[in-house]
Amino acid sequence: MGVDMQVPVDSDRARARCRSHRRRILEVSQKVDALHVAPAFSCLELVDAVLNYCVDEPVGGADAFILSKGHGAMAHYVVLEGLGVLDPSRVDRISQSGSTVGGHPDRGIPGIIASTGSLGHGLPLALGIARGKREHSTPGTVFVVMSDGELMEGSVWEALLLGPSLGITNVTVIIDHNGSISRGDIMKVQPNLIPVAPKLQAFGWDTREVDGHDTAAIVEALRSGSGTAPLAIIATTTKGKGVSYMENQPIWAYRSPSPEEYQVALSELVDPEDSHA
Amino acid sequence: MRDAVARAITEAARTRDDVILVVADISPAASLKTFLDENPTRIVDVGVSEQAMIGMAAGLAMTGLRPFAYTIAPFALYRPLEQIRVDLAYQDLPVVVIGVGGGLSYSALGATHHTMEDVAIAGALPNMTVIAPCDPLETQAAVTGSFDLTGPAYLRLGKSGEPDLTAAATEPFVLGRIRQVRAGSGTALVGYGPILELGLRAADQASGRGVSPSVYSAHTVKPLDLERVDTILSTYDRVVVLEEHVHRGGLGMQVQARANEIGSTASVVSLHLGDVFLHTYGSKDDLLEAHGITLESVTDALIGRR
Image 1 (cartoon, each protein chain N blue to C red):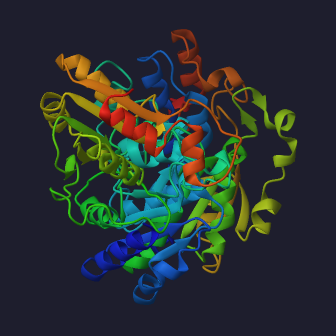
Image 2: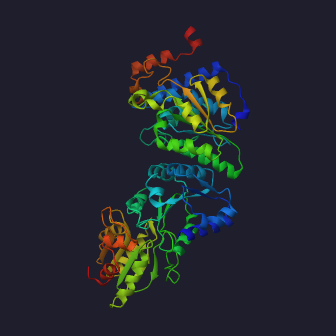
Image 3: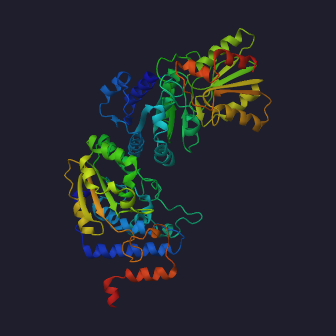
């Protein structure tokens, strides 16, 4: 199981890899009209951490990964590209005429086991996979990345209540807690959603709270499960993380940057060694 | 039909190692006791959580199991419809959603517990097979046949105590094929689900009045056996479609559309539930009567008086 592999985290390399992922997402954003850039930037370190350090194999192994916040698809695609699972030429043509890779994950794309995009589906699916593993006597953990806004879906609470009730411990939820939904600040719409952790604890989950852009901290939390309860990680993140003008600006949930904006964004994502050159 | 589905699932689990039940707070204890005794871990009771029932069933299917998701029909289909659409149909996973108490079975409990439009709704979903057996025998055959499917199915059942109608049927049950249950001539009655019992009684009545209808069970409502529909439309002068379902999206509308499409000269009469929620209660016959469906009205349709 992934949690036993204990691949050490080189924070500098992880940061460089995620900067590269962000540049790649921006590159693709220049080829298509609208891309969920900011939601992908928000969960990028989370997806990268799970697939690089926690699952036994990025695809087809004992562990499994579901991006329940399907609108973060670009994060998943570029991490899969980086792992050699998904052909970049398919991502280059995302959502274009004849393309078989679109704006949300679709079961059957290499590395993608669940069609998400409608919120609140990933966790019940994960419980089913985890429960199925018990019947097959196969090991493995199912990792699910959700958005915090997704927690407003009733199906999520059915599953949060049900998982521990069924004694399922091999599901790990990572909540991309950027504090915002399409229309803005969660605190203005559903202030009672926050704080998240006590609610999950009351439902029988072990919880950890981490900086959702600190790969080492994320991986440490992912590896800290007790084994007696399923683990939920509340990862504090910034929507649009890494590009100053995108951070916490709702419009970037949907917009692709103009050529000028693209250059500004790239200049903020330069690797340190390059900036000295 | 409740017992028949339990028997069939129990039988299947004796020769297959991939059968698992996901139920939402329903107590099939009596009929499923044998299954539970023989397969104690092969049931997941999710409580009153129908969305989780479908999502979990999809996840179980992803691991290679063949889940049956089982609860009362409106809660099996309508409550988690988006899970059925995305998790099962879009991903094309082999989960059978069993809706027990379909149609007006729970006649005393009000429209919250009725499914009058489920065949249309489930049938509109790509990849979905819709099966509505007319009796316990067809229910068992439908469960057995469902293992040949590679995608999801909605199995619409009555509740309990339905008589076997097809023990002496003139044709066997084959999933996906309309079967003749009784041979006659001139007029055909085509239906699905337990209301076929009323259709058979009406056919008996009609026989006393000089008309001897053939009776067909269109248990697989989707994909509809159009080849057989065409044959029926070209063989009989009069085709009466009987269903415990609203007209829109039901079998009657499809048979009428097909008749128009192929230029059939048969007169097609559709007997169906009204486009209305009842606020009256009583027996199922009482509710069918409120929708205009009685032994007399079906008989009249068969002998050409409507």
